[in-house]
Amino acid sequence: MLPKGLTVLSVRARPGHPSQGLLQAGSLVFACALGRGGISANKREGDGATPLGAMRLLSGYFRDDQFSGGRRTRLAMTPIGPDLGWCEVPDDRNYNRPVKIPYGASHERMRRADRLYDACLVMDWNIAPRRRGRGSAIFFHLARPGFTPTEGCVAVTARTMARLLPLLSDRTVVRVVR
Image 1: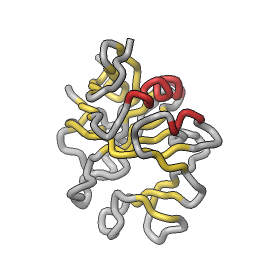
Image 2: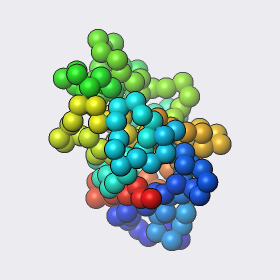
Image 3: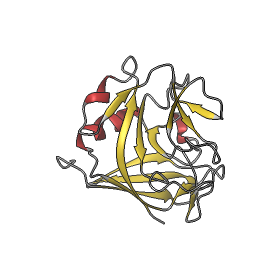
Image 4: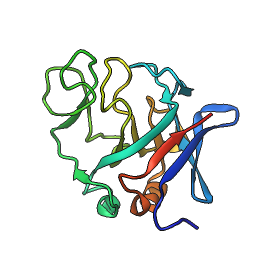
């Protein structure tokens, strides 16, 4: 059983599978996907690693047409429109920030065909202060089938996300441990 509000989600690698993890929420444990580079204490842009440390949930994005539970949370949630992107270029002034697309610098499209961001929560990794090259777009989002690796994010099934969202707030911390 899950508590009424979660202040900590603990994430660790699954033994023998560095790009898959176990997410503990209260007394329950859920499978999750981690970065293709496993967990790293020295996160760098493009290394595919999930950063080691505590990251507060700040806000989120959702596809209203695909993920109906996107508003059932105490987090500030914004619907994903076709022009929402996320800048991933360390030298750009909008590095690790949302941008309106088309955008001149390399960016990630938030409205994805693979639906990984139908529910996507922003964690405070490298947000304030932003350090060039320390990693961008570290999200808590939906996993691919089989929990294949992410580019550094933590990802769970849509069912798990729908179950957790009502219990999350901007006081919730995702703690990635070894």
